[in-house]
View 1: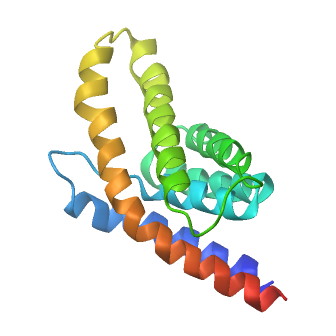
View 2: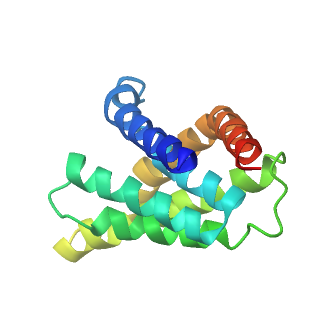
Length: 165
């Protein structure tokens, strides 16, 4: 019960930070994706099931707060959590290289899917422009934030794991 409460609080805090702090630290309208970091980090540390649950609730709160289409981001973040959870067994928690690589792949995939469904379906075919000006800078900015946030999430997970025993 304690784990669920702390995870719900962590998801809520990350969504609030994404909505309030990330726009203030945006560079040229490019902001880091804190929710991808949270979802992939816990998927790596806890497995597919936990990654999917965290991803679903991160996406659902994103849909409620930012979007008009309910469920689109919930589904995307759920897939991100599922994909990240595949690396649970071959991952060492204290190694930062795997989370950085996986978060960059997931953020890149997230940006491409966002482009496909939000812009390409409306007839906007400027993918190279979108990739170079929005997706890749967001990936780089998210990776910079990953170095800080992953350490925090790792310590929270380790504290929760110790309290479970």
